[in-house]
Amino acid sequence: MNEEQKALSGILFCPGDQELRKIKLRAHNLNSDYNKTYEDETEKRNEIIKKLVGEIGEGGFMQGPIYFHYGIHTKIGKKFFANFNLTIQDDSNVIIGDNCNFGPNVTIVTPIHPMLPDERNLMLDKDGNRVRFCYAKPVTIGNNCWLGANVVVCSGVTIGDDCVIGAGSVVVKDIPPRTFAAGNPCKVIREITEQDSMKYKPEILADNSVIE
Image (cartoon, rainbow, N blue to C red; front, side):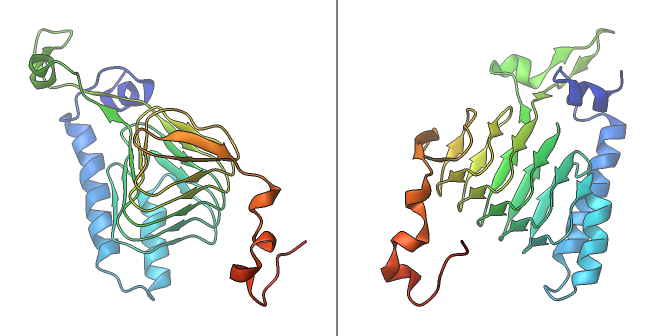
């Protein structure tokens, strides 16, 4: 099992491994290429994104700048929107469903470092070499989710379909579908119901209407 396979399997791996560093360098350079483009250079941006991430559906838009750590470990569904400063540290797999919207400064992290400082600095591999290790757990975000500004999604978390995560939340545990959750640590506030429809907020709806 190589170091990338170890990372994706949730066991200790060496982030300084030469093959992993090549993957990260490629991703970081593609990040830089994307971040140097103008917003209306749609074709150029799409070409870069297709090289950068493992999979992406149609109709997406990332405001930029963007920061993917590996890129190839991230799969994104259709009609994805990300505002400024999207950061995805995808040492393990990151799956984002269809029709998801992210506010500014959303961060998704999958790696975890040992708690004890000595173990965080160095451990021994199977051959007795002194190596710096970490491990990672995947993140899954369902369809039709809205993540507010400055949300951080931590390793191992699953966010269900149709969720809204309030601005500034740090998500450390799974969030069930169709709920509004917020806080640090992020907790479910309530279910999202029909009563949340804009048709019950005429002062905001003004002369517009919802699609029945």
